[in-house]
Every structure is written in C-alpha cells, then in structure tokens.
Length: 187
Length: 280
Image (cartoon, rainbow over the protein chains, first blue to last red):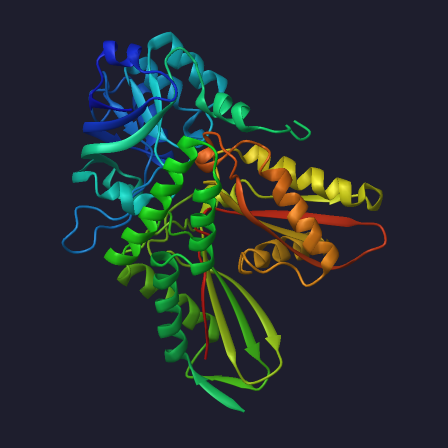
C-alpha cells in the first residue's frame, strides 16, 4: 500500500509514519550533502539563519548530474547518508523533520529523530534516472560555488520512498535483514 | 609498428565514459532480471523492478544510470608493437575524460586535494592503470567507480594459516558490514595473493569479468559459488531493506604471493558496476 504524503511535514504526519511504510512524496525538498552540511552547521554555530527555514522541512541527500538540454535535472538518486551523521542531530534540533537518502544512520542521529520527531526515508540507490522523472523544478538557493553540492530547492511529485527509520527508532534495515537472514556470519 | 594518433584515443575515451554511464551491461541486466524472479521479499522485488526500470529510462533517454558517475578508472593494455603519435598517451586519456563528462552531462565528482577538497570541475584526473601486452592493439577499458560502493571496500593481510576459511570470513564480513551503503545487490570483486596493492588491483579487475563467467580455476570457481551463497544468506537484500539477493556475483582473481602472506582485497561494485571497452 502506497501512502501519499506532502512536504513540509506536519508533526501529525511525522508521528504517523512507521518503518516499512511505502510513500510517495510531493512538495518542496532541499538538497544538501557533505560540503553543504559542513557550511550549514557553521551557520548554526555562528547563530546565523540556514539557507531555508528548517521547520518541518525534508533534506534530500543528493548531488545531481547537470541537466541536459530540455530536461529539468540530470540523474538524481540518493547518496550514502552516513557521511552526514556528524551534522544531522544539530539540523534535526533546528527543526528538520525528514531526510531522504540511503544507508545506515548512527545512534546519535536516531536519538535526535526520536527526541525531536523526524523520519528517515530511503530512495532506491542507483535509480537516479528514474527519480529524476519526479523532479519538476530545481533552483540553487545557497552555496552556488559548490556545484553539484550546492543547496537546491526541488519541487517533487510522487517521489518514491520507503520509511527506513521512524520517529520511534524502528529501523527497517534491522528488521528487514533479520527477516531474511539465514545465518549471520561472524557478526 | 602500428601507429595510433592521440586524437583517436581522445575520441574513444570520451565515448566510453558516456556509454559506460548510460548503458547497463547486458550480463548485469540479465542477472537483475533473474534476481527479480528469484527474490523472496516483496520489498526486494519492488527495488529490483525500480533498478531495471531505471536502466531502461537511462538508455532510452540517454542519461546516466546513476548521478554518481564516478571517478573514471581506466585500464590501458598497450600492445608492445604500438606507437602513440601526436602527443602524450596520458594527456589524451585525461582529455577524453574531460570531454566525456562535459558532453555527456555527467557529474564532476573529483576533488583536487583529498584534504582541501576543491572540485577540479572536469572530473579529471582519471585513475589510469597501464599494462604492456603482446601485439599491436590498444585496449581501453573505462570503469567509472561510484564511491557508495568504493567506500565499503577493504584489504586484509591475512596469515597463511588463516587459509580459505579466513578468506571466506573476511569477504562475507566486508559485505555484511557494508549493508545498504554500496547499493545492493552488489557485485563482489575479490583479489587474493600478490602484495597489498596487487590484491587491490586484482579485486578491481575482477569487477570487469562478465557475471555469467566463473573462474577458469575449478577450485576458485567453487569458492566464488560458495561465497555468493553465503553472502545471499545475510538477508541484506536489494537496497538493504531485506531480501535474498544481496549479491549478483562474486568474481575472484588470484596471483602468486609470498611464503609469509595471504593478502585479500574486496572491491565492492554496485548493482550497475559500469564499464565499457574498445580495442583500437
């Protein structure tokens, strides 16, 4: 069962999403990866505003390919989220309610998600061409000098995702794997 | 002596960078389709369907399969009866990469200094591995490598007494620890023997072998099958959200080694593990 949700997220929607829920996301999301995160944390440390008001917003970890002529954007699939773990708790504390990426998160991120209420969505890694079809517009809003790593505002329609970790700390990576593991070799 | 002008090399590398990024290899496409039929998890099948659909869109619309169009890893097999004319071979390869990434609308993902991290803006330099071989051909293989999978790769200097069990344990643990990060179902390249850097290079080369081709050494072919079976029992599954397809293949290359050592390298390739080649 697919559930359609809109972003920015309201606290009710954050509370209602459960690990394993298949969703289609419509609305505005903001892109940021390693370099942009480093700069956003520096802004927070200096008491300056982020490039966008964070309340209820969703960050998509992506560095898209350049848009060929006639296209809104190039391939735009998720990057590995774990590299942002160092920065994520502070952004959640500042108001971010969701992240879209791929791969595991550390304990500090999950603790912040539970404490402040945030959801971690997964998009299919390596499906950048498919995902680009759901992106209807893009605009660089900060750190233009970072190129593909700049912060972009994306309008997305029916962006396919699955809830990997919900705000209660339930983790699909753990439960999904346990369900199909025949033997956990040496772990 | 056969002469090859650098302009031919530039054109070939440009085309290979684009082709490798746009078109999924046929053997991988077949393996993904077979995995879709065999996968027990419903979520896993949904992910595999997305991956297959993504490859079709990329080919039809001439766009990259993945936004991480990689650091360009290039293997040159230069026949000893070949003479390169008109300039430097390596400059030609780098120029081909520069043009391919620009004209193919591929992402530039290379930083000049690993600690200062400023983007070079044209995806150069490529990593080039050169071999001198018999004959009068120049084979160029372009293998763009994304870092979701590259980051999960590892080398271990095992003891000879660790033996085959030690190799199996290390390979399975490396894939297990990688979890969802390298975009499973993965292709596992393993290098056994040589020295530290030789094992790593063998692991990288192992990723270039077609998935339906087992090692010519029957013992190694058996080890490949055994490792694949064990990896697919981990439960990681497509996209790491649970399932019976964690890897599509395990390819192993070996080389003689020292009496005191057993180097093992694991280079993980994502579900696209891109490469394209030409012989000039």
